Image (cartoon, rainbow, N blue to C red; front, side, top):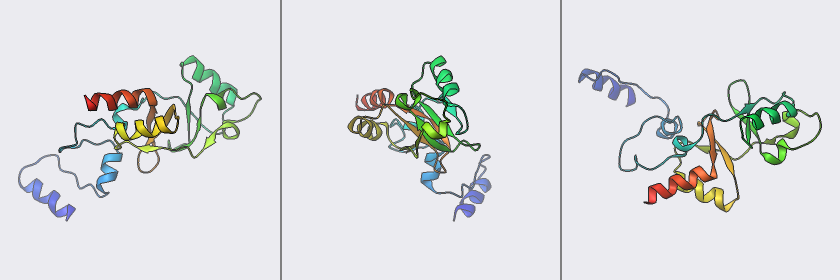
Length: 161
């Protein structure tokens, strides 16, 4: 049905028509624009900070710690060559001593959220589980940004106002 709908829209004069083959949640997870009654709700993909420090698993922890400190950040997302989230270094992991690699120090497989989830839902989860930050990813695991609890709570409060 999707290709037929795309061709029909083109026949009606629409110039920018795309045949999106993945599902609705993939569209939302990619941070693409949405319409409808819930379009105004703050989503974590919009609230997450995009300037998050990243590291690869083979880097030295001491180098990553210095880089995070110079940026004033207490969390680093560990990604692979395709920007897939592999782990997370929070303040506790960043403070580890020794000359170890990021892979040895990181929390593997951190909890992540898709960018379409409401800020309210994630804020409640983060407060309940005492998470200062959480990576936001696309449906295929690529890093979108890092959501800080304070940002999620603020966005949820703005939605409620």
